[in-house]
Length: 450
Image (cartoon, rainbow, N blue to C red; front, side):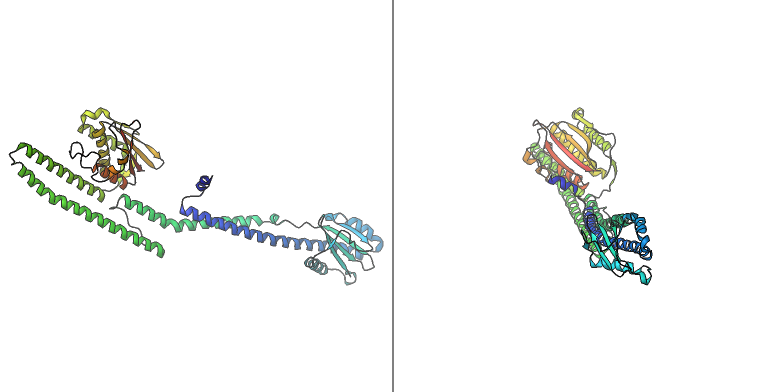
């Protein structure tokens, strides 16, 4: 149940902020609506009291100015209009009624006195009472020649929600407020999304990632300046390290070449072959190290790449290198699959993975499919011995090999998986290794964002 509630809460900072502000705005609007409703109820009560007072004053004037013998007929004619009950009584009725509150009495008295009645017929005394069940006002007027005129009128003020424009005004205000909240929140949080996108681009393509605009509010501009400075330092650090590796590689090639030449003059054939083998291995390790450094530098630009064609190309090239395993190479997936990537780096990564599958498992079955809406998954399966569970993650470390042999033909230099993972992660993806069920074979799963 708790997890379901968490799912309803959005992950986006902009949406969380907007919904929180919207909830607070709704509470404020509800409180305002309640206060307005209370005020509107009081105003509608005043309007109803004035209407009753005016209507009763009209009835009183007609009856007070009429001859006493005609009053019963006028009372009978007026009774029932607007639900009023009119009677001529010797004294005001007090049973089942209560005195009206002072504010109500003041409003009613003021409305009656404001009504045009000749001075000689103005009521000398007015008794103002009310009843609850049903709600009625009971006004008793003292007639000029004695006796009392009592008028009972239903008291039904208009409910506030029936007032024209009552709900519409609040709905319009709430709608406009919600639009303003969402506009302001998404506009203010846009630099955060820009910063996140810039960090993602910097991680994928450190050499070609664009700089953030150093404009806007002070806090945003300061963050952009700090980010651009950091990116420049990271880029310079990578370039310095790549330059260092290239310099070391260049300096080491000359002594290795000299050693090879001197080894050729050895008379012992067996020793000569061992020396040459060690030098070839040293040269291969040096080339792999330089390749690893070049991959870290990421100087290649990202372009649209058809991943399906790239995978089939790597399979064909692997079949040319190892024709004895060509029948065990197979691709399953769509004919075309476009994504933005660095083609050479990506090809080198898949060449290492497929090459390892052929080298240690004599087969490579490649499957390309969608992992989700924004991620592609490429599985590379082989029939080799697999990797001990404790080594599945450690084999990605540079120069880390499960096989302890230093033979180039079997063990390699231990940089192939490191180069592959580095290239894939530079594209925002990742590589995982898992042993196949049954204890034979390995699955290398590559995830790439589209």
